[in-house]
Length: 339
Image 1 (cartoon, helix red, strand yellow):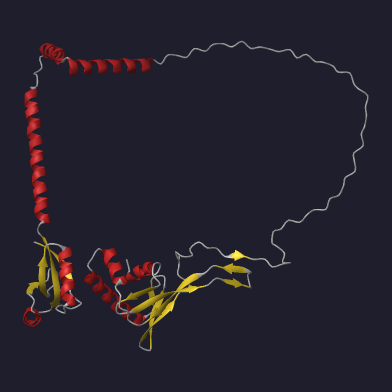
Image 2 (cartoon, one colour):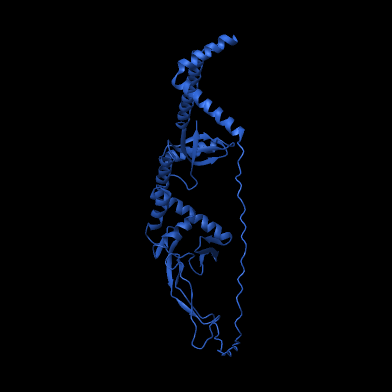
C-alpha cells in the first residue's frame, strides 16, 4: 500500500499526523451550512491542511511499522525514501497524495492543494443533505384535493314479478376405465443383475473358500492357467515401496533446496572490479564494516556487499541499523542468493 494511504487512515483517528522529512497534516472541521440556491442543509465534513514544518512524533512511523510488520527504524527509512520520491515527482508534474489532495513545486517550494473534503469521512459518512421548504413555498408532488360534486339519485323502476321456471339439467356420468401400466422388462433384468452382483460380492467377501473352489473348477474345465495372487501382491508391494522411496527423496531434496537460500545486502555496484575493490576498501577502512566484492548474477557489473543473512527479516533489520548509523547509502538493496 502507498504510504499516503496509511496517512489517510491515521487522519480518521488523529487531528494531527506528522510525516518525517515532510511536515504535518491537520484535519480541519467544516461546520454544516445552508444553501439558499437549492434550499438544503448540508452536513459537516473534514478537510486536510498541510503545514510544511517538522514535528517530533512517531505516530506515522509506528503505524507503518505495525502495518508492514517491520522495525521502527525500517519504517523511518521507507518514509524518507517515499518523501524523496514525492519531491522528485512533484517537480515534474502534479503528485496525487491518496484521496487527500495533491503536491506540486512552485518557486522551489512544495505546495499542497487539498481536496474539497475527505472522501468517505468516517465521522460523517452517510449523512445526507436535508431539504427545507419555506413558508408559502409549493411542495413538489403535493396532490390537489378534488371538489366534491353530489350526484343525483338514479330513478327506481318497479316491475311486476315474473314466474320462476326451474330447469332440471340431466347429469351424465362417464365410467372410469382402469388403465394398466406395462411392465418394463429391462428394469426387471437390471434389478436381477444387480442382486446377483451383490450376492456374488457377499460370497467373495464373507466366504472366500467357496469362491476359490468355484474358480478352481472353472480353471479345470477351461484348461487355463491360474494366476498366482501371491505374485501379484508381491509386485504391488514392491511398486508401493518404490513410490514411497521417490516421495521421501523428493521431500529431502525440497528440504535441502529450502536451506540453500541466503539474503545479502548490496551496498552498490560498479562497472569494473577495480572500482568495486576501491569502494570495498573505503567501507572497511572508513566505515569499519565488513565488505566483499562479487560478480552480479545478471550483467557484467560488479557488486559490493556488506553482509549475508539466512532470512530476509534479519537482512532488513541489519540494513536499517547500518543506514541509521551512516555506514551505507540509500541505494542499498537486499537480494536473494540461491546456491
